[in-house]
Length: 418
Image (tube, rainbow, N blue to C red; front, side, top):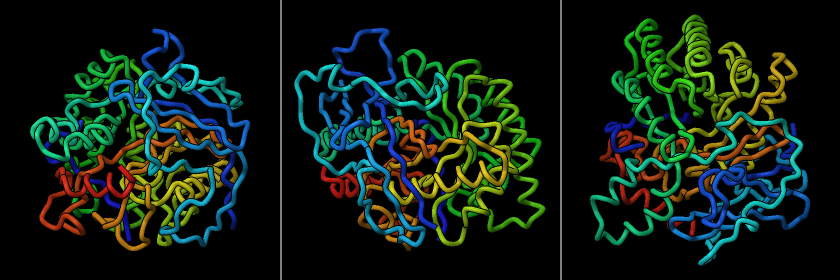
């Protein structure tokens, strides 16, 4: 089983041993209560000092409130735990709890004093993420205002920040416009650069640059458009995790290309926080393999890596895997301080352990929040756009990768209790 990343076929419509899970502090990253003072801190955080500590995730526009538990004690998860098992500790907030409505959420309930001792985060990681008004979900809702699905879709998917995917040659020319739109809204853009040669090994998301020279030109244009403004970039999902079509020489060449891309982003987009592809916790790719590839690809020159990209592994499993990678990178590859993100867009019910392509029974995961995890966790974000197809397979056999499929979105919301 492998995880593949979904290409946005119409980019204008898609804005996208025992492991110890340590206690953390989390903060809202996609909304601010209406009563918050302009110019006040946007790093809304909650103390993890009590067993029932909670933080409200507030959408000021829709005016609904969800509370998610904050981990306060260490919990362990065996490496032999199957991917289909649900999280059983408070270390992993779930997205299935029903929100409670509040007509006037207060700033104090959403932003209690933080007691985190984690090191200071880059500016991009203390802001609120940009909600793309042209995401696939938002575009579908706009085109179908009378549909029974539209209200739920707007509340639970379209109003949540997801990553904009840059997947074609001309897309690199639009990074400036996208970042400018985010800046005008006072938000931080979450973006995915996905144009590496031999992308997805020719599978559902095949494509990419013709060769290394074309790719370096592409990433240069992409980085130039971002410039000196804060942003977050996931650099080439699938690039290190899914290498079935490459031999050892090909893998080494890809790692070198990623190092060059990191150098270009660092030089031309100095306020951009970069994460590499950290893969997913499956038996065919070990922590040792991924740590070695990350180190060779230059992870020490980035913020870290992302796990569970476009996949379905639950928070506890994903977090234990990410923490194990952090430990291995620090101990074996002299890369201390590496951090990681979890793609929680569709992992509310975890993985069934078999299927990765539009599987049945999946659910929305926890909405985006920053973290200050002692194990290296930076937070949960939505890289995948819920409702977009993984390819012509599973519950959407007639779709193409990146198509928005209303029935997929409906199932994800329903299975999450929405």
